[in-house]
Length: 122
Image 1 (cartoon, helix red, strand yellow):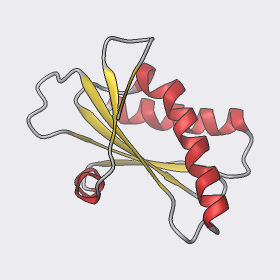
Image 2 (cartoon, rainbow, N blue to C red):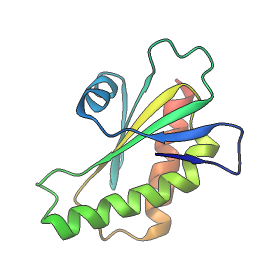
Image 3 (tube, one colour):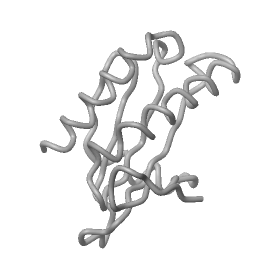
Image 4 (tube, rainbow, N blue to C red):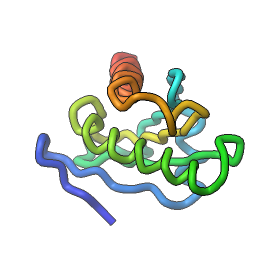
């Protein structure tokens, strides 16, 4: 399942299988109050025209309703920010934290934006 962005020339592809998430785990990590972002360059991605995105929330966050709310919020924030601040040829995993479900929307966007900017600078 893919989703083309209107702000840029590349598309964002959803990562769905565990090996993709495990691969990204060994890359760069940025921690913020409301989320954790992991990023890693895809193998053999020489200026690839797409990015991968994945979302997860552990059971420590809460029950299924809360975990799903966290992932929905992360998906929407990534839809807005990833085309602007992500790098083509990289995969990103967004991990919910306890504050993700209840933190103010502008603060969640600020946290994600600062994490993506930090990852892009390295």
